[in-house]
Length: 76
Image (tube, rainbow, N blue to C red):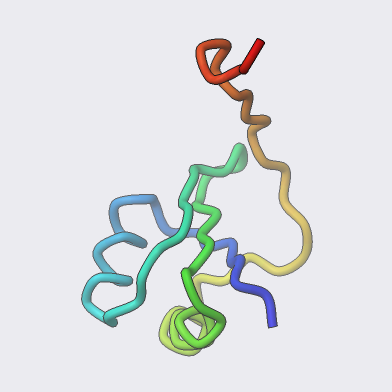
């Protein structure tokens, strides 16, 4: 099962709910349409969040912001 989840909640709310549930976050980012893209550290954590926040799940694919690696991180 995927560790990635798209939720209609904002980033602060998702972070607080993960903390309350004892679920570690691997990555988190805002979505273009509003909402949050969450990647849990474990698949078990993702299943916990899916169960607890099932009414906030966004079904299907969503458009995400493109991320770029800062120029200072390139090795030349």
